[in-house]
Image (cartoon, rainbow, N blue to C red; front, side):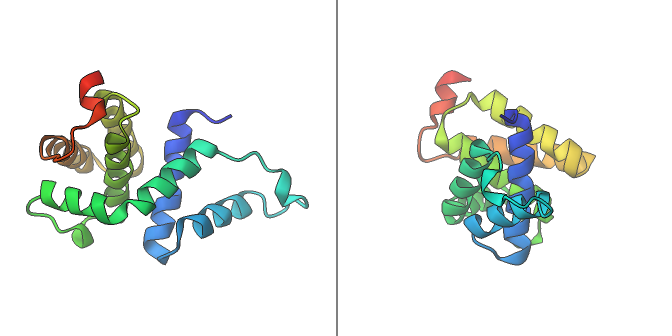
Length: 148
């Protein structure tokens, strides 16, 4: 079983592929597994990362709503002008915020770690600011607010 941090990294990678190739979540998830195990004769016995799959499917199914919230929170930045990595870190974290299963602080910390690892120093501050604004501008009360 993968750690949740590793699952988030994988989810970011798959969301990036979805974004760049305009693929559906399930197609990108299967391509991810296939790429990892192309030499494996029995593709069906792979260990699946269920948390990664849940994050990808959830973020993709809610993409329109997430993009709307992120767009409103990032005032002077259009989503299509954001680097794809940053855009997908924001989608992933916003999905977790609206899902409400984890404290806000944990979700933000995980998003900032992804930005540090896969983007740049400027992106860390940008992601932090946008996610703070997403939380502050939320019309729907976030369950994570009560926990964090």
